[in-house]
Image (tube, rainbow, N blue to C red):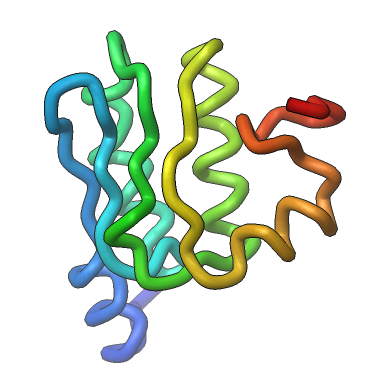
Length: 105
């Protein structure tokens, strides 16, 4: 399967790095970027206490699923920042600020 040039560019622009105790996401957290972000985030997750979204340009439902899974694997992790689309997606999927289902926190 080949990746369309626009999707490849979007995936290349998105990244996640570890800065201290934070996973810092940059760029669009979307369907095109999710597979690469997942691979980048896996080895960085242990010991992380924050997911920093201040540099994320936008998010879609695939990006939300990625973040929710990361948050589920790191109980107590705090999500910081609100890229465009996050609050609407959280409301639609009934996720709390910590991206947990049914969490009213």
